[in-house]
Length: 192
Image (tube, rainbow, N blue to C red):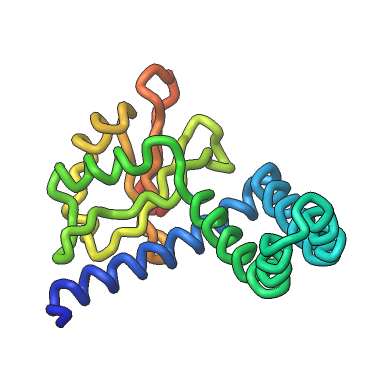
């Protein structure tokens, strides 16, 4: 029997997976290398699909027994489904960046979490198009209000100076500059 808390937790996990998938799709659109990975993966799967008889014959020459029968059934029905599921997982993995889970854990330890005990979800880290000195961390707030964000503490955790928080399209964008940089973020609130 599912309790209310378990339902909330399951809904939160599904929401996070969906957000990861969308962030991964945006990352593929921004990164030609990641788009190439998906294109190559798709091309290999299409080649396997159209040449499955040849693959079965190669295995048949080596074995000729029950393995061939099982492989034939897998290639008929399982390969497209498995290939699609693996592609979805790859896209979701593209939304992770180095230390994203550590950042989330640190945000939770700072008290930034919602009623379901979920910290904001890091969805991306990239350079600002207008100014390459600024690094932008993208978060899905998951119900954590902007007023709860302690920017000084977050700046210390990320080892950056003067972070600025922007709310844009249901996402929180944290604009940062490395500590060793001479560049200073001089963004007025009206620019957000």
